Structures are given as C-alpha cells and as structure tokens.
Length: 187
Image (cartoon, rainbow, N blue to C red; front, side, top):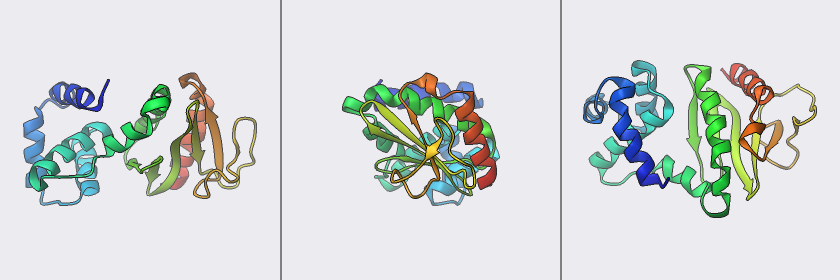
C-alpha cells in the first residue's frame, strides 16, 4: 500500500478508533496552544489515548494546514522501506506493534536511515540495513551477549546490542522481552 493510501485508510478509521472524526482532532491540535510536533503527538497520546501512528498522522495534517509544509515521519519510514527493502516493512511493523503496547512515554522518532525508539532516553532503534535484513539495536547495558542478542560492535554506538531480523517471525517473545527490559530501563 502506498503512503497516500495508507494515510487515507488511517484517516477513514480514526473515528472508529477514537470516537471522533479527524476534523475534531485537527481542531483539538489547533486549539491546544502547542506548536512543536513532538509536544502535539505527546498530548494526543497522553491526554486522548492515541497510538503513535494516529497521533502522528493528525499532527502532520494539522501542521501542514497551518504552516503549508511539514516534514513527514511517515515519508521517512516509507523511504527506508522503499524499493528492494519493501519486503522488510512487516518486520518494522511487528516491532512497532510490540513497543506500542508497552505503555505511556513511548516516542517513535523516524530519522533518515533508522527509527529511534525512546522512553525518556533511546532504548532501541530499527534499521533496514540490507535488502534482506533489519537490524534491531537495543540498549541493554550490562547484559552479556547471548545467542541472537549480539554485541552491537561497529553497528551503532548508540545501542549496546543488535538482533538481526530477516522475517517477521524473528520478532518473537524473546525479542519482545529484550525490548521491554530496555524500555523499562530507559524510563
């Protein structure tokens, strides 16, 4: 599904998910008095129970209509999983689905080459490193590497460990436990 179709589907489903149409939420964002993207996303998540994806979509729409142009986190993610890496997107989606269930305080921050996962501080990152593999970097300082949980080495200095993911099924209960431990330690 292309980005425009994905956003149109989200917009169509927002009333079912939140009980209010998208225009209502655009008005909430505009009247909030907040200006920064991250503040607005946090407000929708904390005060109104939004998931990151829906909050991000509403804020981008609101800021775009207010400022005429806004950078788009969805576009950054779409660019990471374009072309030969398109088949890796379900791995990313599975990781995001897991971390969104960890509770309040999650910040999903797409960058040009990876997506940073934060809970006060960065606890993980998701990066499509090759056309056949996503690298999941996790901060588990003090934990010895074991099995699939390898030392990050030269992969990325912002994380202590790396897990190589080649298919959605690789994002299993073990990976969920490592992510949850890192999320809890970061908050």
